[in-house]
Amino acid sequence: MSENLPRLELLRFLRRVQEQQLQQTDRWIVQEEQHAAEQARAERLQPPKDPGWCVSYGIGADRRPIEVHIGDCGMAKHRKVVSQEDARRAIGEGVEACQFCRPDTALGLL
Image (cartoon, rainbow, N blue to C red):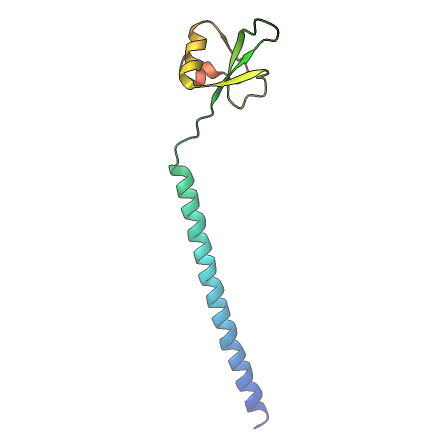
């Protein structure tokens, strides 16, 4: 019986250590969940990013404006970045709005 007692005490000690480790792991999980929730909340509260605007130009000597695009439109070639106000003005002056990215809709002109 005395031989079993030290082994039993060792096993109980091991169990206490493992419980402490499990509790620490649970605390880390709670911290990570709180951090993830804070990040998600911060992302929801951020104002939407301004996509930017650009005008594509023709090639050649006259290089007239051809189309207005939302800044990340893949259809915009030979482009120049412009402000939102300049994009509105260009569409108002007859420069076409891209049929793919629809800057006229994004600018509230339709």
